[in-house]
Image (cartoon, rainbow, N blue to C red; front, side, top):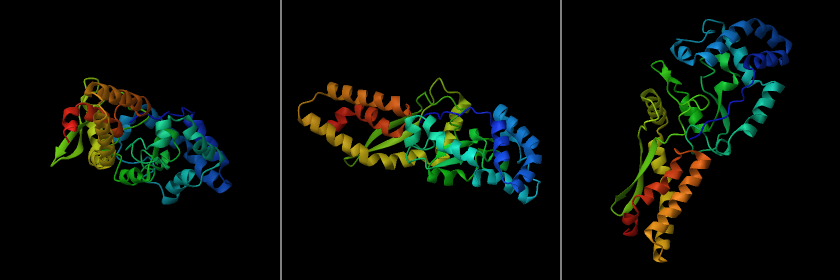
Length: 277
């Protein structure tokens, strides 16, 4: 897992620009809403904890057509918003272009509303509310972005602890069949609140179970390669060195909490067991 790059545009001016590009009927509906949307943006950008405590959207009592015109800023995009979406991945790390930051399993085919636009239509085109996301995570996130007034999911713009390793994998042998068991462990650099968020994120998306299932084929292939090396006379020390190099290379690309990278240290720490499989 790694952080996304925030576009850091003037969010307030961007909304006004998009409103100005709308057809006249939509402009007439949106223009009176600009001050209220501005207030909502200030809460999101400057005091997200207060937003988590906010019981509902600032537009919860408005007529459905008011909420609808806000959502259509996203659903019926103008030229400026289309350009933002077109340019978005040009400014992201290669790992984010390849993999959904929420799960690091599938390709991010959509931009997810971190705070759901149905519940909070005022954030439909707030660019900091838009996160690359695979279709599966997008669907699973529909269950809700907060739990008991705190975030359920990691915010890949603002949560700056992903450089610290908290995901681990242990090699397990059951009836001669190897598998990986993934677990979370809190490092000293991550606070209790941050680790609680990590746990909520992993539980909501069932990531430990998904990683265990996804890793089977990769683990089998790596173990077979290592057994070939052993048959050719490679020592444990040289194989561990090779696995360590591959792990470090993967960490540079995907961060220390990428499930597939953890195949390497898991095997390296259990190499005598692998030799006797």
